[in-house]
Structure formats: C-alpha cells, structure tokens
Amino acid sequence: MRVIAGKARRLPLRTVPGLDTRPTTDRIKETLFNILQNDIYGIRFLDIFSGSGGIGIEALSRGAKEAYFIENSRAAVACIRENLEFTKLIQDARIYPYDVMTALGRMAQEPPFQIIFMDPPYGKELERRVLEYISDVRPSFVDGDTLVIVEASLGTDFSYAEELGFSVVRVKEYKTNMHVFLKFQEGQE
Picture (cartoon, helix red, strand yellow):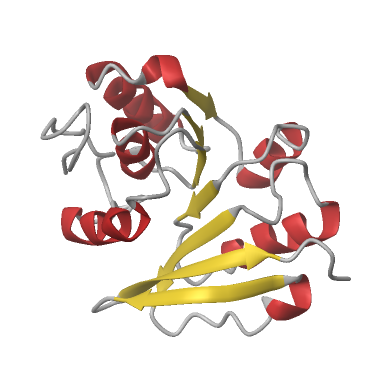
C-alpha cells in the first residue's frame, strides 16, 4: 500500500498486521480519488474506521487542509500515527482513538467536514448507525455540502438512506465492493 499522488506520492504505508483491517487497494483508492480530484484541495476530511489511515493520508497528500481519523484499535492507531509521521503529514491530522459513536459525540461541535469517508467492517450495519447518528443528532460537522462516502460490500442495502434524510448521489461498483456517495438534505424531517 502506498500514497498514490500529491506531497507524499509513492511513499509506502504500513498496514495493520492480521485480518482485523481490510486496506482499500491502491487501484480502488486511485479510482476514488480520481472521482474526488477537484474536491480535495483545502477541505476538512474525516476518515471513519481508518484502519492504517491510507484514505485520510491520501486526502492530506493531495491538499486537504486537515484530516481527522477515527479508529478504536490500538494497533491501528499506532499504525496511523507512524504513517502520518513517515509521510510528514501529522501536523494536519487529528486522531480520535475511540469507538465510532464515542468519537462522533466528542466531535459534535466541530466545523463541517466537506468529505466524510467510512469503511466499516462489512455486514455489521455500522454505516447505518453512523448515518442514523447524523440524522438524529444533526452534528455541526455535517451540513448540506458534506459528501459522505461509504465503502461497503456489493449488495449492501442503502434503501433506508432517504428516510434518514440522505440522497444517494452516486454509486461506484468494483468486483467485490462499492463506494456509495451520499448527501444529507438538511431541511428534511
């Protein structure tokens, strides 16, 4: 795994040993950032279920102003910190070493993120819990311009998204997984 483009281009990233994380492949990461290429510079980026931090680090390398990482695994947090230090991007990063719901609660008053990316463990409906939290709590870190991207296994059901106030604006499918792009429609009840 490596940084694809930007300030830290071609630098290798450490991954968390074992099968607890599933790093996004370089090819899928490159496709994702090709889609986002005009939307990264100068933004605030949130990487939820960060694993080794590859997605948030890619955003920083490509010019994001700051990136926040939510990850509760101690080994993964250590890996994120090491990768941020190695790429010299740590000064623009903040790590929340908590479970996702605790971290989101602690961040509720943060200014809006322009992009929120999450890659939760498949089949546990954790993406739904995060979307329900946003819908119910309406934290200040999400507004009508925030793009939420969920990496999920193919066939993951997002039919509930509209009733939570989200519009699915794009779906990009790969061989075994997909990226679902959502926008929160603030005025909806």
